[in-house]
Image 1: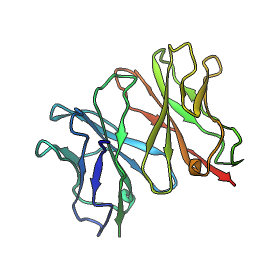
Image 2: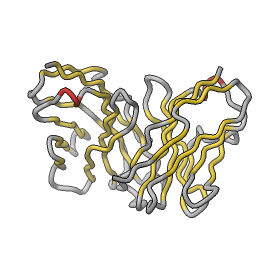
Image 3: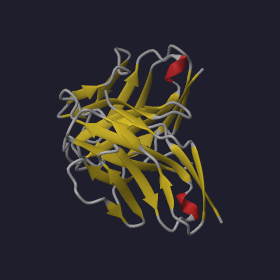
Image 4: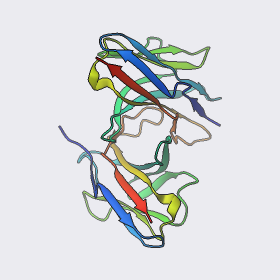
Length: 116
Length: 116
């Protein structure tokens, strides 16, 4: 069964460093998403991406964040200068369609980012 | 603004019993979708079930059903015949067309523990 994969599973970095979180969405999916979940809290939407551009982004997704689809398979989230409060689980998701209200998004296993 | 409320931080159920996880929502939009996700201790997010605001029938997927009460703005998840593998965090989420934005909103989750 096709699945979304994410690497690394755990990333530890120093405050102020740049990190790149990588995701490989399901191959025939066209819509990609990043979410984050601070430990013990709810999942928060960061950004959606389609046709090589951002479709929507939340208030969390400020200038420190960027996304890219560098090739036909990878989808990356870059945090330019990490802060302590960026420590969280980051989930990538993909969907075949963007049915506005309904679209089944398939989530990856997540990358746990720890900023020291 | 959209809001999802899950008032039960933790629930316990005996194996093979049914359990209801509560979710109430708030939106001024007429068109919206409600989702439930399961997050086991391994961390991944697993889509369980979807209910559209215009769906007249309650959604069902195997042992999962959604008790949708539109007037009360509730979308409770019912798990029948609980299994030990159902122990996990459960998140209710909503997507609505809010000013052209379809950013999903998640609740804080309910931790379900199934006892043998």
